[in-house]
Amino acid sequence: MHKGPGERLGISIRGGAKGHPGNPLDKNDEGIFVSKVNEGGVAFKDGRLKVGQRLLEVRSYNFSLQCFYQNS
Image 1 (cartoon, rainbow, N blue to C red):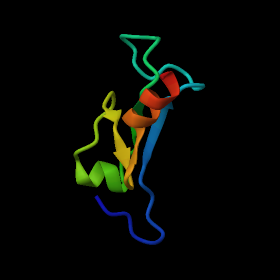
Image 2: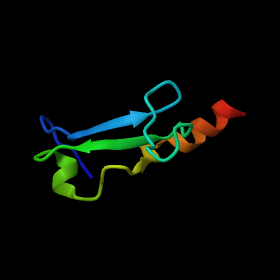
Image 3: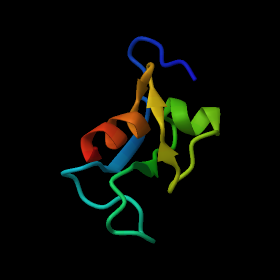
């Protein structure tokens, strides 16, 4: 997915080590999850991101490895 200048990605996220739990099925899960996809945003138009999906990587930053190293 590509966001051009002046465009909004149009998602909200929850979770992370110090954030609000993002996984409604596991309050101890420190993953980062999509909590909202706004109509009209790039993510909505693209159609691949859905509410509840875990974000694993953004711009080559691997969230799953970050959680692994923090817990080691």
